[in-house]
Image (cartoon, rainbow, N blue to C red; front, top):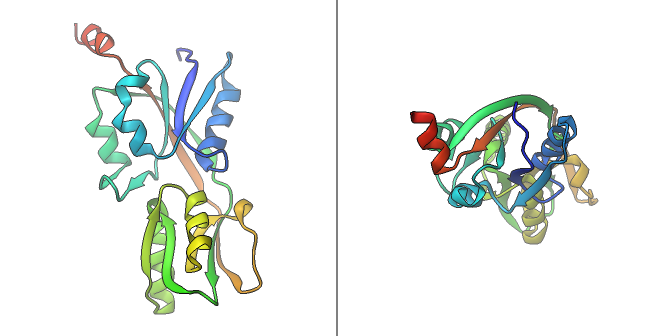
Length: 192
């Protein structure tokens, strides 16, 4: 595999994406800078700025903002992103938390975890207004800020309050995709 110096992924440092990027960087023979972004959508919007760099994207990527998942992105950017590597790296333990003294019947989650929440709600015969955050870290922040009912986040980020209960725990192995962001010159050379 070719060597690169920058890898773009989702921030902040509390995200699973950062942990996976850090793991990937440690496996390389040269220094790799991890560039964190507020959302994957921001990276996709500015791909041409990052020509020659790498992108780290989990197979569970899903966005409500651009109505896309990993497969959509893989094919939509087929000429701009070249899949060059993949690896399995476990997510930090996930938890579904219920605030038993919520102010609003809302749940904050990352879109990738939507099926975990909807499965739980169906089992319990409950409803809630689902709000999507750019990361599980920010889902927890939004949940606390709004004093909402449910959140799915990483256990490492949680400061459990007396009115909260962990309803579900999840251990998830994740497949991570490493893409090279291609320049227009590289695309022309590859076609010839």
